[in-house]
Length: 99
Image (cartoon, rainbow, N blue to C red):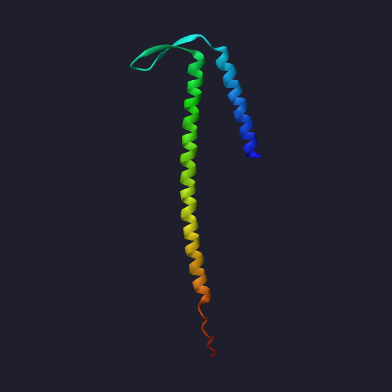
């Protein structure tokens, strides 16, 4: 259900961005530091949205990789603990001493 809401909100955001970009078609000066270019504002808005999406997507992929690495480490630790517990269970108990 969460994935569906994320998809719907993403589509609404994309639609709003597209409408905003289509309304703003006037040419603007963009200074890249080494050159200055005149571009339609629609390209600047869509380019910035694309760059933002790439940054957020990269962060998400990095975070997912980090979490999977942590899961792998914790699974290995859990396996070690289960093996240690199993080896303790197989030991024969000492007989009770009576006084």
